[in-house]
Length: 233
Ligand SMILES: NC(=O)c1ccc[n+]([C@@H]2O[C@H](COP(=O)([O-])OP(=O)(O)OC[C@H]3O[C@@H](n4cnc5c(N)ncnc54)[C@H](OP(=O)(O)O)[C@@H]3O)[C@@H](O)[C@H]2O)c1
Image (cartoon, rainbow, N blue to C red; front, top):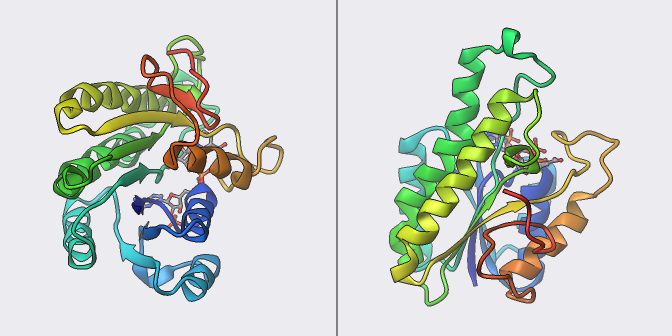
């Protein structure tokens, strides 16, 4: 399969690139800044030279997303899987009285508008696949049922990402494209911190099973965890 993964420089995205390449897929690893690729991602590119393409794609910049589309199109005529993984968190632990709306805009730009821009521009390639799938990496923080009084920008961006997933799920259904919002679990990454219970490898393993259709997802639920279990909306 041909797979595009955003935010591939570190964390979950980098591990997903590794696993997808190891499984024999062709992987387009989108990175925010092509001039500062992490040594770990570069090492993977060296190991799977013919399968991994590192592509500059700042998901907060529509021109960068458009340019990335042209670069991927030069290599492959179609895309089977798009994993919108890039994400940021800001304004953690702040109360509503302390919310910084500049930060709020940044978070919405990357976590919500980013996936929307990537879907908008890469749709022509997904439409050419027989089994196109969009996986938006979401979070339990974006669940209405678990709403808590904190992480306002992040949680609201993920709730809106879930809604966007519901929209494209219906909007692209006629093209046979499926869409899921996946909570990867609390992971030991720069974002999740050292005390998280899951390694990004454990989470990526589950997500790759979803990608490889080894987990049968209940079609009624589009918001699931990394093992394909329904999440409360
Ligand atoms: N960690 C958790 O416990 C947890 C829990 C629930 C959901 N999630 C979600 O899982 C996803 C991955 O999180 P993570 O823990 O791997 O985070 P992370 O370790 O902080 O890594 C974030 C990745 O996103 C990239 N990124 C940030 N801004 C970008 C932009 N404008 N354009 C392209 N890439 C950009 C970063 O690139 P640079 O290296 O260039 O900055 C980095 O590769 C996120 O969507 C996050 O919200 C994480």
